[in-house]
Amino acid sequence: MAEEINAYDKEENLVKTGERKEILKEIKEYSEQNGDANMAVEVVALILSNSNGDLYIAKRATKDENPDKFDKSVEGHVKAGESYDETIVRELKEELGVDCIL
Image (cartoon, rainbow, N blue to C red; front, side):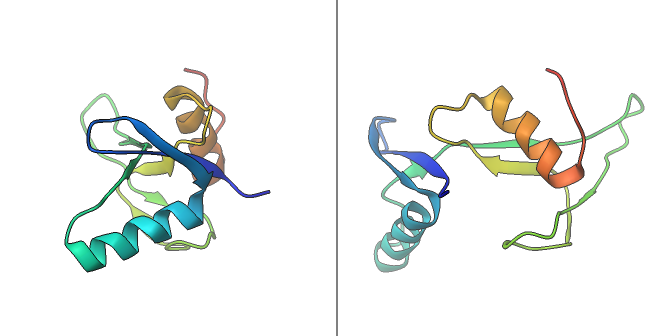
């Protein structure tokens, strides 16, 4: 099943909901032709640190984008109808295999 995300204009108005790959492709093509993005999508990012302020890096899961690479954060697109909290819990599970309660 395709992952659906929301896309917003520069005034933060919802302009479309659609399949993630198609919306990102449309934004990329517009940006390459015009030098700026015509829409924005919601994302979350979590930077992991301990009580001493030491930062952790995470090894990405074997996925389509940057598989098995190290990253400074756990990140992901917010699915249509999903909250930011739900997204970060999902991404932690997908990227690191960690169950989290916020």
